[in-house]
Image 1 (spheres, helix red, strand yellow):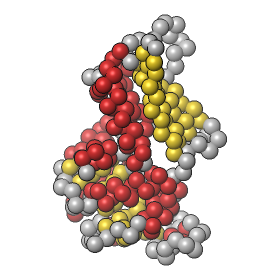
Image 2: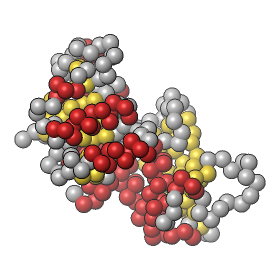
Image 3: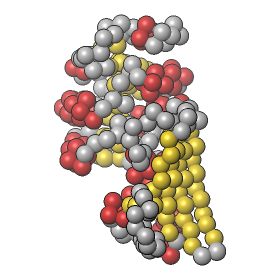
Image 4: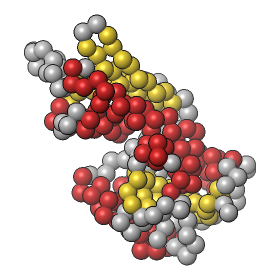
Length: 269
């Protein structure tokens, strides 16, 4: 039996990448495509919207209620407001959800956790399976090396990215801090130039570069006297994120209600 998916944000670049990844997976069927109500091309086919005849003739819809009858996995790459609206609807009818949207407030994240008591939910700041392995490895390294090794994070993205640091970099900082029993957001240092003092023992330095068309690069550094460990992930196209989201949909389709982290599912199955 194929896993049916609903793609939210289907007119965007990530939406198109998810459509292509889903078409290549024989275990996936695209049950619907969704955009916000004000989108001017709603009602037209995905092939028309993306000007690509290779894409399916499926209509791009603007009303999420059209997709509530058949149990499907919703894949979200929209914005926090739309993602939460769709999650509330999905929770009412028992549809699992994979959320790749970033930018949620702490209160919104708490609502997502509460709603996951009704349906299975995966929330990840980065859907790449490679990045989620990076999350796992960074946590293991932080745990094994301990506080004697200073932690730093460098992320690089294209020059059109608006937020800095990236959501993935912040997740890495949270993971490192959690393994060290610290509060990451209290330890983050984005600019040392005004401090005029040596590095704090538990600081987590964070650097963001924006250049060219870099899709995404993240490196976690652990250093102490005499040695340095670096763990790096480089994304060269959005295909990695799209394939990861599609695989996540298959992982969660038959799971019980709960809040799942993609890196944990990769380890536990």
